[in-house]
Length: 325
Image (tube, rainbow, N blue to C red; front, top):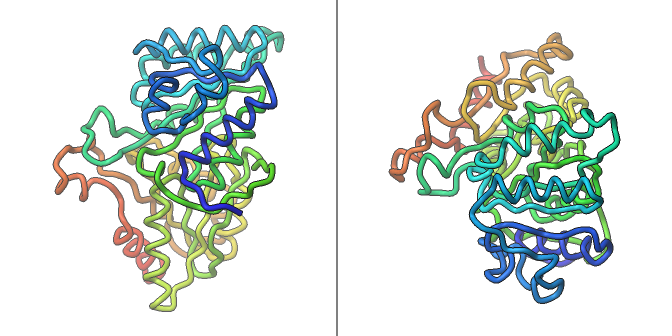
């Protein structure tokens, strides 16, 4: 095992797969000459050249469409968005072409493409650069949605995403690129659609994913001092969702808290709540609590932003509420 940064895990996954398959290439804004906006493609231009590491204009609709057409002709593009907020400009290509062409062509076309980049807030970037779109993309049949929370998962899941014959939305965070973690030096992959129990517990299940799961870890450490045992599940993949792992955990702990950095209306936590109510209702000893951002655009003020985004204190309060209702 070697300790590396999240950005290095992303770079390693892309580079290793590109060495194995000449049909794989990377395109996006600043991915080549600048080594990526967050240095996640550092050194790749030097190794693979400008035909396989391609700087694009600021035109997400255009280069998203080019990548989809390229995938229809046998290539396996990786498209990097500087932020998924910018992917809104190209969302017509993602939703109406990438996600639907396999069905609409009667299976004649696979679309083996990865759309990747950061999601959700990253400090004081303002309302238009701080949005979480996981639930938007997960709502669309034909897309797989992956949101890793650490370097190990990021590398293994990205390699699986690149090898997948369907379009995969791979969502990261500007605030995770410097995170460090142990990653095997030998080849490995992580299957898409499998959640991971990051911490075993008996009193309450906490489900989360992406960078906000760090707040769940902090809360679990605090609660442990009071003798409260939390089981933490990292979804890793939003769609397909590993409901089995969640249900099994809830049947053991009888309580559920869901932590998600997203607006509260119609999000991933809402779907998890429905699945548990349908398939494990009789096991619940308390109502499910979901923790989300405030139901407003993200504020710029650091004081307001701190109140807007969920934190470990919110998790502690929620856990105690389901325990001592």
